[in-house]
Image 1 (tube, protein in one colour):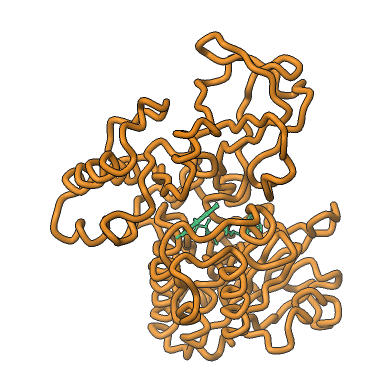
Image 2 (cartoon, rainbow, N blue to C red):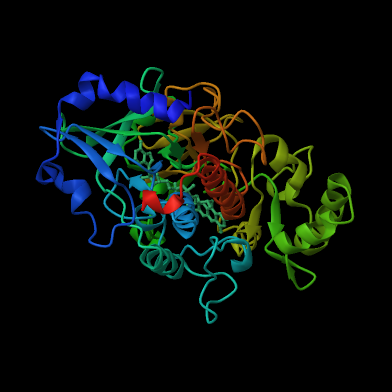
Length: 426
Ligand SMILES: Cc1cc2nc3c(=O)[nH]c(=O)nc-3n(C[C@H](O)[C@H](O)[C@H](O)COP(=O)(O)OP(=O)(O)OC[C@H]3O[C@@H](n4cnc5c(N)ncnc54)[C@H](O)[C@@H]3O)c2cc1C
C-alpha cells in the first residue's frame, strides 16, 4: 500500500489525531502568521493547539537556506511551514554579525535561487543590503515563518509514517507545540551555536569576554587592550589570501582555474600569487598549513580568509600575533611560549557549530560528531523517509542554492508520482 494512504488510515485510529478539534482560533501563531500565507493546510488541531498537521514540508530555520528552499517549493506550487527560533528572518545576519560586515564572496556567488540581487548592488553587498535582499526575497515568495519557535525534538514516527517536530516557544518555558508532516527539511545552518572553548582561567578573567556573535563594532573597545582568540573564520584564517587577484575575485579566479586544472595545481597558483602580493606570512606569525587553501577547504571545511586590510595591520604592528593561551589569571594572559600580557577584553573568534544533533533524532543523514551531513557535497542533501538538509555543504550560499533546488524538485516528483498536483499543498 502507498505509505501515505496507509498513514492516513493509521491517523484515523491514532489518539493524537482523534483528540484534535478544528477550532483554528486555538492556533493563532500558525493561522495568523500571514494573511497571504502559502503554506500549510492545517488540518488537525488539538484542543490546546499542541499538535498541528502541516500538509507541506516543515522547514526548520528561516536563514537564507530555509528561505531558499521555501521559495523553490513555492515556485512549484508547494506550500511549506518554516519554524524559526528567533523573531526575524536571517537571524545570524540580523542579530549576530558585526556592523561593517559585507559579503565575503562576490554577489554572483551569493544569490538565492529565482531572484537576482538588485542591479545597483555593489560586487560585495553590505550586510544591510544582503538583509534587505532577503526581506524582499521572503516578501516576493510570500514566505512568512512562524517565529519564536525553537525546534527541540524531531523524530520520524514509524507508525504514523510522519515526522513529529516538537517546538518550544522561545523564552516561555513549557509552551510546547508539535507539528507533524510528511517531510522535514533541516535548515538550521552550519553556524547555529557559538563555540566557546575551554580555556584555563577564562571564567575568572577580570575584563570583558564576548564571542564574535555578540561583537558589533571596534568602537566599544577604543583605547583598550583586546585579545582576539582564534584564527577561525570570524577572527583570521589559517590561509590568508588577497580578496582579489589579477583583477578578479580570488574566489572567481579559483572557480575559473578549476575548470581546467586539478585542485593542487590551482592551490599552487593561488599561493604563488598570494606570496607575490602579501610576502611571507609565516614571518609575521601566520604559518601556512601543509594543504593548499582549496584542498584544506574540501578536507576540513576551513575557509581561507580573503584579506581586506587585516594583513596590512599585522604588517604595521597594529595587530600582533601570539601563540596559544596557556592560562588566564586576573587580566593577565600567559601564552604557550612563556610570555604574558595584560588585556582589558577578550573576543572569542572561535567559530560556530551545527546544532542538528541536539534536536534531530536521526543519525543516518547527519553525523553526531559535527552535526553536518555524513556524505559530502553534492550528496548530503537527502536522507530517508522525507528528511532533507539544506545549507550544510561548506560551500556557502552557492551550496544552499543547489540543495534548495534539488529538494524542491524531489518533493515535486514524489507528489507527481502519486498523481497529486502540488497545488493541493498551497
Ligand atoms: C560572518 C559570516 C559571513 C559570511 N559570508 C558569506 C558570504 O559572503 N558568502 C557565502 O556564500 N556565505 C557566507 N557565509 C556562510 C553562510 O552562507 C551563511 O552563514 C548563511 O547565513 C547560511 O545560511 P543558513 O540559512 O544555512 O544558516 P543561518 O543563516 O545560520 O540560518 C539558520 C536559522 O536557523 C535558526 N535555527 C537554528 N536552530 C534552530 C532550532 N532548533 N529551531 C528553530 N530555528 C533554529 C537560526 O535562528 C537561524 O535563523 C558567511 C557566514 C558568516 C558567519
